[in-house]
Image (cartoon, rainbow, N blue to C red; front, top):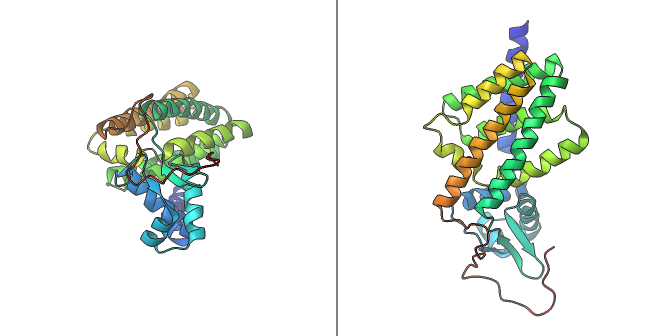
Amino acid sequence: MQEQNAGALRRSIDEQVEDASASPAIDGAERVAEGVRLRIQNSEIQPGEWLRESRICAEFSVGRSIARRALRILEEDGLVELEENRGARVAATSVQEVFDLFEVRAALYGMAARFAVQRGSAAAIARMIVLIDQMLDNAEHGAKSSDVISISEMIFSEMAATSSPDAQRMIESVRRKTRWHYSYTALDQAAGGVGPFDYWRQVRTALVARDADAASQGARNVLYFMQGEVSRVMLARGLRLLGEPTPISADAAPVRRGRNKQE
């Protein structure tokens, strides 16, 4: 019976990952936002470069309303900055800023893992273990980094569900700010090595043993690993350090008189 339940849960997880991968194709704005995200992460669109609605409409064959919603999504992800009367510009996030966000995220995820051990029901712990096993299996068989990260986010969501509403809001806020900053690229580049998966095995062992300290440390180590890899990717691509001027693309929008505040 337990094996049947575990098998059903694995099938449910696979369906959720497939749905998550397919959803951008259903929602036009999400599809466009995903396309722009990948171009930013692949350095095809540079920090400081302007993203005008007309350009997005032409490149993705969508209307202005969809292009506008896509830019709003990217703003929420911290990847673009919207400026009144000028449009959207790719955010020039510094290495230190991303490093610090991962530091905060590691602390919050460590807290969530601790609470999961202390407060999670047997059924919740079982779901987390099945998810971890599925993620490790996918990684071992060369699954796309986006699929691996999607499952890891499901695990942390299960953990965060044992936290207070305020803690859940803090986790979600920081998660959106760090998820799209070269996480996929960093995981792809680490694919030939150990990656963060030994730390995930530590988390799994701690969940089974109901060891709150070990679960918390393992979860933090997962984020510390990604923190280091993302920082290396950003430095290798010549992205700026804190205090360096924000680069301005050659096609920057002309400066207009009057108000020019961020929305």
